[in-house]
Amino acid sequence: MAIRNVREIGDPVLNKTSKEVKEITDRTRELIEDMFDTMYEANGVGLAAPQVGILKRIVVIDVTGEEPYLLINPVILETSGEQTGNEGCLSVPGKTGIVTRPNYVKVKAYDENLEPFELEGTELLARAICHELEHLDGHLYVEKVEGELMDVADLYEDEED
Ligand code: NI
Image (cartoon, rainbow, N blue to C red; front, side, top):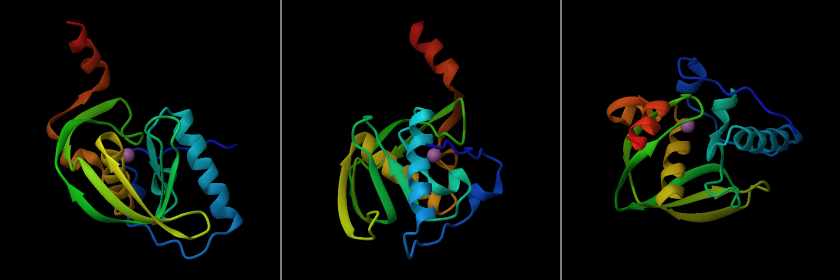
């Protein structure tokens, strides 16, 4: 188990386009394992390889803590509906903002053996898929925030009032 350093907003690696994975090597497997460890350690629901400084099209997601998904070379096939809600990112620590996303997403991706599969998600899973895939093209959710980017601490304060 190894926790990798999560790159933060302002780090140029987060604005670069990641490359397709063409083969799975021992290093790729180690990266995937470390990405899951790093995501769980940070209590995140998703992590993309560029967030740990590796420009490869690899994403890990787990929105419940019990449903780990690995998406290699993911491509969105279909979206529908709309959801508007708060979003955050391990690369933008302590911040949150309102983002509108599709409420349903169908994605094609490859597993750790480079076998293709499809995954459908709604609500938080759909949101996480959209958010993480954008990291692979060098985009952060802050570009899409409606209104102001807020401090997470302030958000909780408001809820107590
Ligand atoms: Ni993120």
